Amino acid sequence: MSQYFHENEQINSVEREHKLLNRLPAFIDYAKQECPYYAELLANVNADDITSRESLAQLPITRKSELKSLQNNEAIFAGIVSEKASIGRVFQSPGPINEPENCFDDWWRMGQAFYAAGFRKGDIVQNCLSYHLTPGGFILDSGARACGCTVIPAGPGQTEQQLEVIEQLKPSGYCGTPSFLKILLDKAENTGKDISSLQKALVTGEALPESLRSIIKAKGISVLQAYASADIGLIGYETTAGEGFVVAEELIVEIVRPGTLEPVEPGEVGEVVVTSFNADYPLIRFATGDLSAISQGKSSCGRTNQRLKGWLGRADQTTKIKGMFVHPEQIEKVRQQFSHIGKIRLTVSQVNHNDTMLLECELDSFAKSTLETEAFIEQIKQSLKQVTKLSGQISLVPLGTLANDGKVIDDVRDIS
Image 1: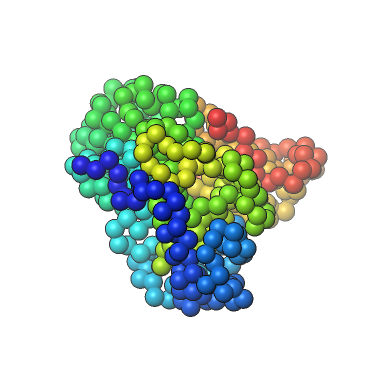
Image 2 (image 1 turned 135 degrees about the vertical axis):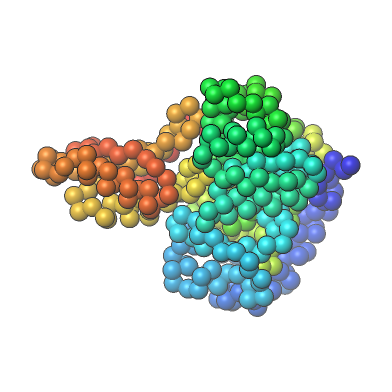
């Protein structure tokens, strides 16, 4: 049995680079012909001239943070999806942002991550990422099945039922967020449920602090991370070498200075920008909003592709909470629903490795004294949940309490 899922994982890095760059002219020409968005964006670009990273860096960037407004003004996918594409599913992630899926096997390329994490044919995998409206559950589902695994489409929540399923079906693997795995482990310990069948985990959707990794490993479960997005699919994945995230095959990854087109120096932190050779959903210089850096040297696991140092934060205020993106525009939408609220700020933190949200809302003293506070707080809480699909706590504070620093979302989680 091969040590690698993809045939190119151990090819010479110079050869890989040459192959990818040679594909750029034809791919850019295809995108211009098949996608109205690129026909306009790259109208003055001669595709035959784009044959190097330097020339690629001259092309405009499409930012994930722009997709919401682009999709509001144009067709369902803003003209980015190829007119030849066979789209089997349409998702709507928080934002809202529309995302397509062609349903052929491993369209998201997630099989590489599962294979590196030790998943093989015959494994039963409990998939605890959401299948509801967002593509996360399907992304993991397709990757596990690409490795020959059988998937239990559990989704998140319903902890007691999840534990009963593990006891009865005895899955050997888990995939989902690391915080939910911790919840399952804690609940199993408190209730005496036998989940000893779990031996491996592939986690994604949020950072995996080393402290939490140690807790999971102490339970006899090997755990590795995958770095993916709802637009691109797999971008990078950990291996047993523990030396960062190996970049997925079939991608060109750049690290650019946030807010610019300009690539940073090797090893410097910047925004992750991806060109994905996906004929259904061509993404050319797609800025993810995530911060990372390229690690120097080869991985001891034998894979020769570039490596990312991991998730190092967000280039904008958009953040990911329990596997769901939350955007500043969503928090502003909550504020606009209540005339008595002035400034507003969402603080994201962690308690026992679980993400928490606190929405602070400034009220003048008259409004705070005349409103039925408990009822008003409940209204805001329901609005926050409706807009973000996540639950959070609400705090009413006097005018002038929040710093005048332009922050709408303040992520104070420790990702070390």
